[in-house]
Length: 114
Image (cartoon, rainbow, N blue to C red; front, side, top):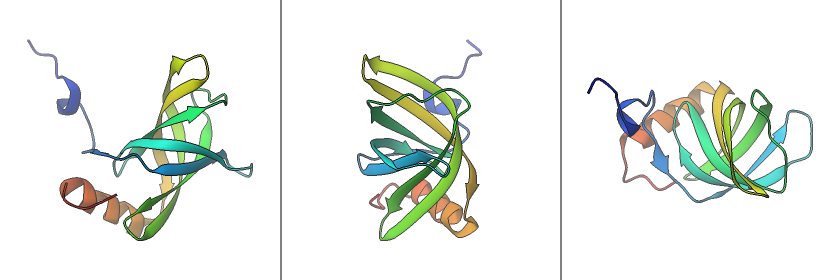
């Protein structure tokens, strides 16, 4: 009875997305993935054909409207979808303050396209 479920447990509001993003270990080559949801605190994405471990620090690049956001985050969870695909949760540890503010605005207004 006292357990919170789904969105009630979430620290940040999230919005769904299906945009192509790029990610990479800091100072390494970019790989492509598909963003699944986004918040001011992090991003969930699906990656194919690569290894991503809990605690890895990754740089991600994605678009919010007409703006490109580059952030650095730490992998807080990773789940195997199938033998070659991973569902990854990344918590932002470095993001430009203006970009974070923009993310907070869009996650509170579901009419804003991502």
